[in-house]
Length: 164
Picture 1 (cartoon, rainbow, N blue to C red):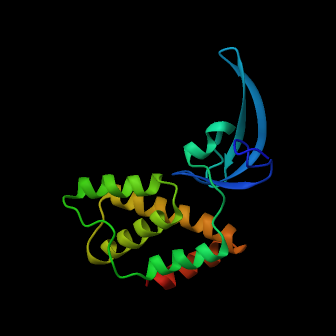
Picture 2 (cartoon, one colour):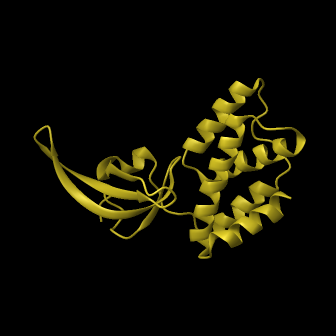
């Protein structure tokens, strides 16, 4: 399989900021007189469908679900007492957290979840902060459930225990 087409129909992959998706098809379309192959993705959390050019999938951040070894790294990040984003004021922090969420990295998403969960324990979160926290949590739960081959409720309980 070429570098451009690393996924097969039925594979699960992670698409930045949208989360875990299933490759439901690979279709060819003619665009501006040139034939191009596309992955058809169905985002598992929302049911949204997306088309991504197979030759641009890596550039777009489409990646495999993390390995079991990476699950341990994610849990270590969640337990880490450090804070990833310390800039003030909130709108600058919000921008940094948003970039981390859209990076496509499970490790960056884990940092957002950890940091915002801690802030929530100290003060009331703004509407934007709550949305980011919820998005980070949903992204983590979906990917960890697949990586660990278990249900989302179990992952939710594990995250609650780790985050305290």
